[in-house]
Length: 480
Image (cartoon, rainbow, N blue to C red; front, side, top):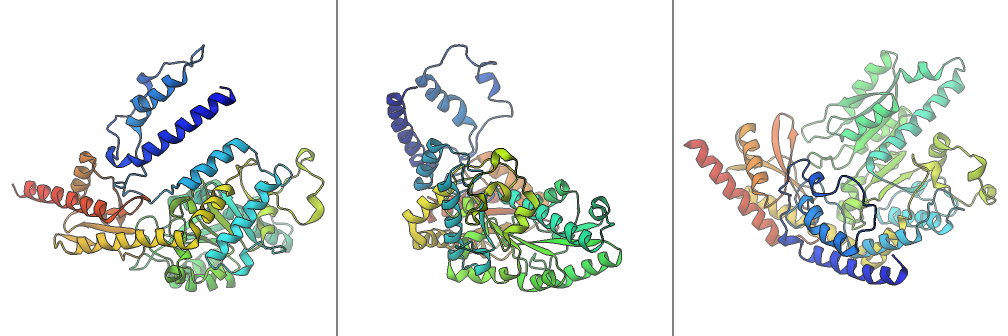
């Protein structure tokens, strides 16, 4: 493909993308295919001679689209939102064209420096404490990770390195293996499974702290477990507090948990993957109170802040805590400016060496929408969630299972788990809307998350009417 054909096909692709998004409401939100559907539709080997571009494009509708779950459909209410906006898509196109691998400042100075500034912009939108901002000479700063799972793992590994070095400085005879077998990390029993996975990869024990009646981790339960573990000769070193749990969007009590972590010299990492975007709105900022106690904080603009995946924002109070864990400097990665003290080499802040120019997406989105536009997007979703909640509460057959704070509503039919499993099965079979469930204690619960950038009240009302009709059919069948 030469440059003239690229111009032509590029314009056609933008039209195809725009048509897809404009007409997404008309597509079935969840695909009607069985596992393995795709393999018989394509040849078993790559073509020896080039295929035509026209054939490739026609195969998108024939082969790819039948197996796509349309995350940006206004009838997609599963999981949490995944962000999408035209400015972010355009920035991603430019990122692909520039094609730099920004592992160091020298590898592409703009890639590094724009990321540092964008993370400061975003940190200021959230009113993060000054210690988390890079500024011109700060000790902290932000980095774009690929996902919240990656951020949790990076924080745990940094905390593990920090505590190991501290213990060995005090007791040089201690081996790393002797320390590792005693290290313990903690999180709420509502924390995302990625926390457990981080502990598994990091080779440390993880203990789940029982949450309270609001599905939040509280100081008393954490303190009790810490004291018991210390008495048993274990070494507590890392705590993950979740703001906006995946199951029901509950919030661990930072103002209680934070001081305990600081007093015990435990690294406190905050995972606000979904909810963090809402903290740019003054009316939700109080949910972040206590962030000043944290060593690291992470949320996903690629969930709810109109910046397409992948863009997971992570801040640390002391950048040396990260770089101390991951820094290796072979000669081929060194550069003449390294000793100036004015630059960041992001390869020391993450697991991979390479990284894309992801901050372009933030720059485009923040400038095109402005803070007020981003706030309006968040508020619209929260308003729609409360509209759905009010509809559920008007039907005495249903119950709300957790406080609706942001854009997620947890609800169920009053009755057995089996009844609610049957309702979800009917919703899934109809494929008009897409939902996923969760367990809250011993209850099987349906989650209704406001996800699409284009979702309106009419879509929410149609979804509720659909759920009610299926529930009526199910309850009628149960009686017969």
